[in-house]
Image (cartoon, rainbow, N blue to C red; front, side):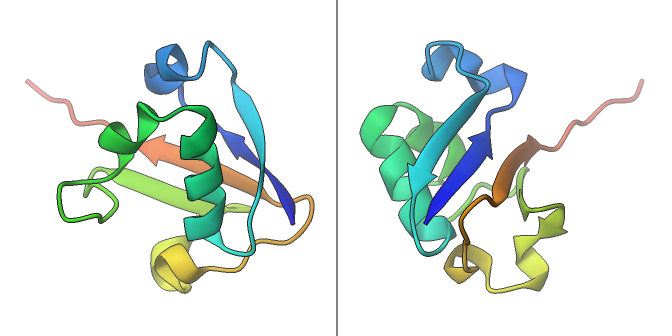
Length: 92
């Protein structure tokens, strides 16, 4: 299945400034594996040393948070939009 991954501005330098990347994959895990084949430096920014999505990274498929679906096993269909959204902390 072809899906489009939206790359946040903080990670554009690792995708040669591509704001979106089309990938194949039946689920999020496969889509990300194919993303990393194109842009291998992204993996360290999205996954921790235990192979899990970093706690401050949120992933959405068509605006649905994968944490409330099947996480990395969340299915991906043709035309789906996968969003990588880093949490932003702030304050005084």
